Image 1 (cartoon, one colour):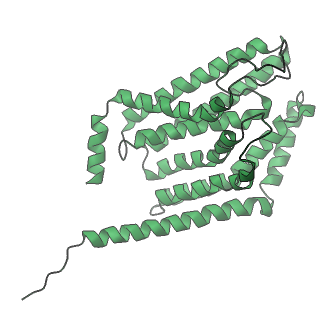
Image 2 (tube, helix red, strand yellow):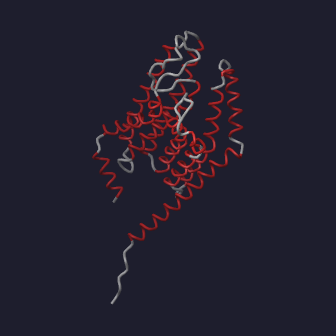
Image 3 (cartoon, rainbow, N blue to C red):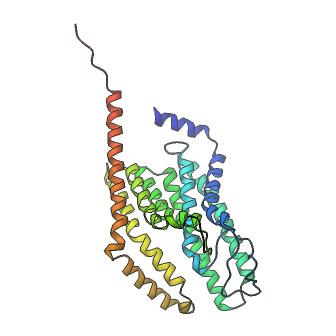
Length: 312
């Protein structure tokens, strides 16, 4: 009955609303940066900049020091758009899901174009500037593609596929929350005491996503393994990208930067003291969630079963 009600509610919702859901998700993903004071960071290759004054308004923090921030703002926005679309029904259908993706893409493409255009006007007329701007834009475009795929999965895919989309968002949510609590390029925050806890936000959310997805089929088991893989590898990848891109010594040596990043990734993904706690957190939360889900399902079955009557 609930699925039937969800399907009827979805059919009553005009497609235009799903465009708005997608746009709303995209905007929500950008909120940590917009709330921080969305001004272009100082550029190493910039000219005519006044460090004492804020830079021009931009929708994304274009800087080699905030590549991870660019990625998580866009990816989390895509997952939020998918969640808004699916909330109107168990599965709103491919057409309405694509409308949500379209609304998301409009917002995110506008953010990338506006930021790239504004940044280009600040940079020096040099080949290095062109390469720098191109690389940042490629990162943003690839993140937007991941966001669109995640939005489509969460909005329209069966539970295993939707679970993978949710887990992608969960893997980025810790960094997204970090941007919200600790604005980029700021050195003070009233939430400094929460820093140690942020490490466990994404693993816990991935565990909840695994519990929501379940493990009752091969597809759902694969989705759970994908989620655990994200918990294992995403922090190492994040550390590697941030370390390599933030090293000014290697700014003009892209092969050297890539080699350094690979070295950091190998170390961060193989040290048990770094890898084990997030994985244990995800597994424990997933098992607890699956147990609660099983108990609730059992209670519903007992409530739905006919009550035996006494025979005279």
